[in-house]
Amino acid sequence: MSDNNKISSHSDISSQAKLGNNIEIGPFCQIGPHVTLGDNVKIHSHVVVCGQTSIGNDCEIYPFASLGKIPQVANFVDPDHNSKLIIGANNRIREHVTMHSGTEHGGWISQVGDNGLYMAGSHIAHDCILGDDIIFANNATLGGHCTIGDGAILGGLTAVHQFVRIGRKAFIGGMSGIEHDVIPFGLAIGHRAGLGGLNIVGLKRSGFTREDIHELRAAYQQIFASGGTLQERVDKVAQDYSDNASVVEIVEFIRNESSRALCVPRETKEH
Image 1: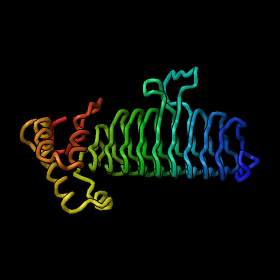
Image 2 (image 1 turned 180 degrees about the horizontal axis):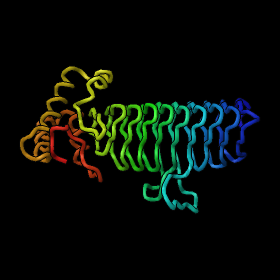
Image 3 (image 1 turned 30 degrees about the vertical axis):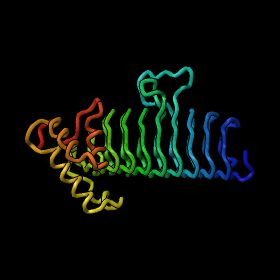
Image 4 (image 1 turned 135 degrees about the vertical axis):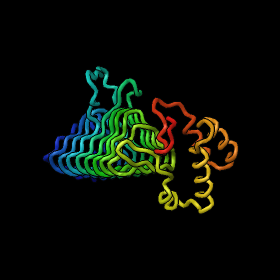
């Protein structure tokens, strides 16, 4: 253990846990024997980190967060302790956040990328794979096996069905129920959410030019037009915008195999 670490004597830290340098751990925390903490990790009071959980450098974890507990799966069995939770660097994990480890069906791994903000009460279920620069507002919740792309934002009280994919830089409005896959750069909102267009604000903040946004919007309108089948329209967009990497990303997202249907505009009847 590094001499630079500041650990409260009121916390229960396993002697087998692997601790980096310059770590702060407040009172009444529990750190299990198979936990790895990177450098400069700050853990406030009343935090539990257990199981085979690794936390990257420069993360900050607030009171009453619970990281690495076993999945909320009926009859879950892991006699060989394969289940893991991997959390990247520079994440802010606020009060009462829960992140669970993986199951055999998902390769035993739940994974969170870098530079995320997970606000109070948000939940990441078993076998979810999250990218970088993600924001979960208060009480945003994922079912198991969800995939969330880089830069996605989930509004407060959002609930995402298991196995749903949310693409890069998508924006999900607060209090939405997401049953279907949301395309990259998409904007979805509603009790049973429909696609409401593109995340224009997010695109502008990410440095997309007016021309970039114009092309994305034109491709979006073509994909979700009323004529022909969805596959025919996607194939046409793939041909027309083959030089536009962002449009190609949307096309590939739609073409990729998924157990969930595609989230579409409300007036579009295809699923």
